[in-house]
Image 1 (cartoon, one colour):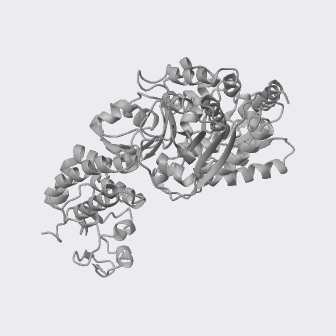
Image 2 (image 1 turned 120 degrees about the horizontal axis):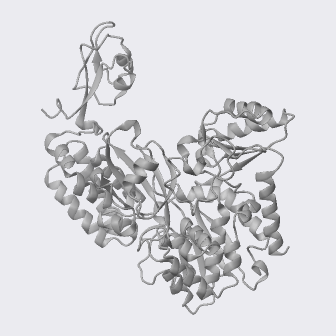
Length: 626
């Protein structure tokens, strides 16, 4: 089939869907939606369709980013705009069918907004809502809007037009466009993408590779997963363009096996692209050939490092190798190899679909474009967001995130996952770009943002991330293997009340040594959470050591529980759950806690009825370290 006919058929199908005579539902059925119950909503809608005289269809879409409102359902009825609903239950789905689809009566419960366009109802546009209005959806523009399993939906929304355009250009001109856009790698240090491509293109070698790093091992990060589940063809298009630009005809997608839905949709997208001559031999009728294989990773965090990732693809143990030579010169099987992550390659597709100026008008002078972030932790509106680089942390947390959960005080924001650092609340006016975050002692990484409130212990946060880094260390180099273990031992002493004041200086010394001596980027950044928490929250370390106290009442050995006498009614609820029999007292009499037997498990605190609140948790080791 001629490529122009492919685009025409896709556009016709999309227009018929949006402007057709039959209603349709689109249900966000990515991983976040499924965990919230979207599969049950789809089952209910299909049941309603089977038992209804009204004809309507139900299809799946990816995550639109509003994870805190899942399951999300959009519904179209002729004569009305597409209406988005959040937190939809089975009962809500039935009500929408019976009231709106059958009778034309809009159900007002849990409406988020309507798709932009002709708005015949008094409902705000979806992208004018407080969460979405500050965002600029360049990479995520299809997620939650199109069916990721339908190639026509992607092509009708400008998909593969970037590849079509690239194949009419010289390969060097494609690289020039990426350079002119200012695109930097979205997976770590932010190296200029076009410059990296140029290194590989300039290598005199007939065999070259494009590798997509979709490993994404950071705790709390789900940017790559959401893109793969919601818009897999955008990645394929970006990879094919990259292959054409550097002269590669083979590509690999390295994706962790823990992403089954992403892998399923990737495999389907690859088969669809092959079928329509968008992938394989003589792509779009040209002489350019390109194939893509998916390699499933086993979940090792170190395989997010590019040389360890390449070793894993080659069938070796995932361990990093010294650089130089860099992969762009000698990578997979010794051949020139470009490694970009999912968001970078998707950005490539968007740039070629439009133009470099369109992309570079967003962001800052040195950090162009937008960036996706997984906004998680103690924030009201958790989810996947996309903002221009240079947007401040304050705007992200309060304008998009809606502020701190339960309106508690913001304490810090962790950026960059285990390789990043903690930015304190008094610095949240910092712009989120590569240079500003580096000056603060942290990194952007792949895009995890963890919001922490007043109930967070920063020493325990440092301990958690060092524990993660140590367990995920491949063990190849001593600074990472032994240094993280020693840092973890010191931090565990501090959170258990056994620390010494000189431990703080020792942690800093160890951290700097690990950064300088580790072989790969993962070891080099592992101390960042410790170094930034010492830099910005040193007083908490001192309190843990000198006062044997955890102000956040998190560290088990540095807090204690006690019963407030004038509130205790002797209901016996706490008595029944104490695993060490530390609580004594007869029913309907005031109870007491034996501090020598108490292990600070907190079960009594959780079990005490809210109406009494007779058990309180206190910072400090009043009894054990008196």
